[in-house]
Image 1 (tube, rainbow, N blue to C red):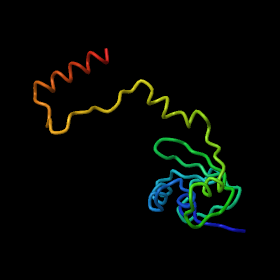
Image 2: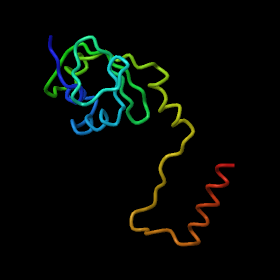
Image 3: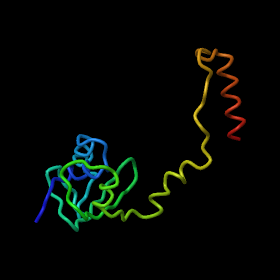
Image 4: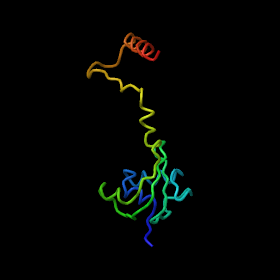
Length: 129
């Protein structure tokens, strides 16, 4: 039976950008295999369910292929099946609705003066109300 370390598999199928990031997440008890919290050295096999908490989102995957080396995205998505609930996938969109874009200040304008800061704050307070 083919096996590979969980941190290596998470990195190889492009769930994490780096193996270090994958290992840190596993060490932080944010990865479960078949419902059990695991260490980075725990091996994963075909058919295992991997639950990952990433940036506050609860992702759920089923292992379809074992990959040891990082591959391109089209090949990586064939190595797992995503069982993440729809409401978890739309959590970010729900959070973001009604939020404003980031603030912008012209290049070279420098920091706002005390007077400008007061005007900005009063404008924000009127907008929130």
